Image (cartoon, rainbow, N blue to C red; front, side, top):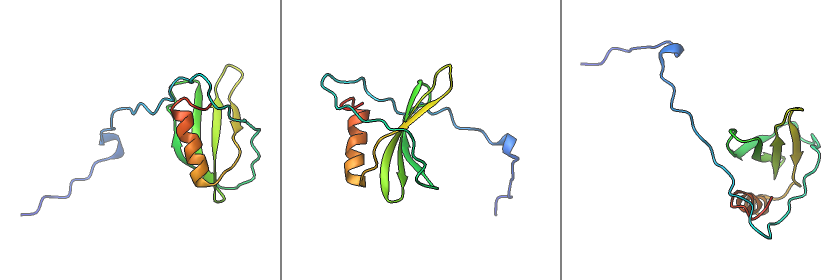
Length: 107
């Protein structure tokens, strides 16, 4: 016997519990400074590959565009968001920098 096809409206579908995202570790002594630049808008399409939790005022996003990766930093404050980007690097170099940022070795 087949089960009847039960369809629910979107309002009836339960949502998963809120996801509390990744938080960067506190900055370590002797950390690597990242040079933050004004956004260039040099790409039409930017894909966010990874990001940190939005529950804190500073959000980091690992972005992919035009074959290169960069980190976007958004600082939310009373005056509105302030957005800066790192330089664009090949995948292997930027993923290493992202790892250092997340572990507190770069900021």
